[in-house]
Length: 349
Image (cartoon, rainbow, N blue to C red):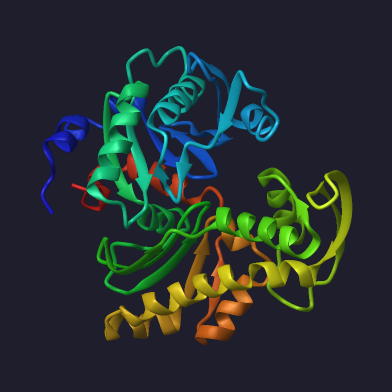
């Protein structure tokens, strides 16, 4: 694959002179992570922004804005401007990214940064344009893109340049990416727009149907993190506070692990099916490699208890969870930045 003019302009100088003002961004539906070249990960914040309704002025971003979800009045709104891995609110995304870029940069980096951003492998041309525009308006001088599965694979130490096939399943907040990687490219993939957000929504829907209890997305996420499981041997209980919409009063219910398994059944089945489809698309020679090497799970969804054992049971393949599932994508993008000549063929041209 040839080098684009942008890549030539960005990396056509001696290493160490220009790249110090480069950063990698994992712009996720749930969280945004930024890697600054030479320093590592310098920012990890929820992808949430709070804005004044009339002026769109930024009130808060990241963790502070997330604490406002479902709590704002008529003059302010706290929103998550990405959905299913892509931008749904361009103005809010630009405002959020401008703040994040400012937080990540140091005083020494007065120049506008060049940015390598991780995007879903199934992203469309329109969505690519939206990502580039948002980052450029937020202050990026130039924007390069790399598929998330490739960055995640590098982040967990997979030798992506080799001929052997390796499968990565990256379960993020808005997407699940199934990719077979060989010779610095994605040989087979399956991308579905289902991830941690849909798990939260499934928990909310179940509590509403089963207990007539309305809960916000932050409560649903808390329940997922504390009790999310797909295996019957994991049994525990917890109290959940919400609004009883039948009586119209706040209420507390005790739910158990079987409730969560029931709530997550359809979403988990969809993820398992996506992995199956990814395997079906895999060329035979690479499929034989995966039998030996297994599948690596990355992303926040990899932390759902029992998911690795369920996938092992359903596919008959070895499954392992990455040591750094939440940060391996941005770490991989950072490795690409550090040695761009070696990894330039991974970039989306």
